[in-house]
Length: 251
Image (cartoon, rainbow, N blue to C red; front, side, top):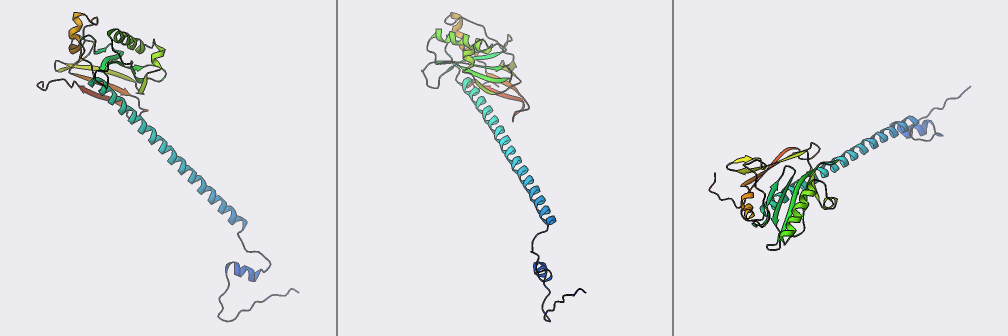
């Protein structure tokens, strides 16, 4: 006949609970978590780890995207600033053509940063390759008419993709879908290639070239850039340049 163990406790003593009760009722059994409790704890910890990893990954992606967008904006701002610097430094030397737009490339002759150090031929175009970009090319410092003439022709060949050597020295500004240029003359924006906005070509040093410098520079230039949607700044961007030598008596 099985005997029953009866535990007695002094009157007023609180009942044991938890591990203490387990030790009293089953002295030979160790106190700890059950298998189900361990599985639940492991599952919860795994979920927390996954959620934490996804949160960190999202933060890293957001930071990388923000950094990329910031770089795109800064690069575009630097390119537009260089555009303005080039136009502000247009040369007024009578023997050279300061500005020319043929529908593909804008070529210009500008002064160097150091006055009297020579001239530079600068060209801007849209490079239509696998990834279309707005690009800029610049010649070395020029001090002779023959050197300027050679650089002017090189700029045209570079825009057509005929000079791989010059392409290696070009600077890519930003991806570009399309671009347009307008000249402001006669109180109206006109196509530079039209009779109202174009200029006559002349041989450097010829009598016709003596007045080409001032006549070829319009009162203003409007730049229209169409930027792809993948960029931080997308869509149509309009940039107007005003000739710094323009007198203030025109409305």
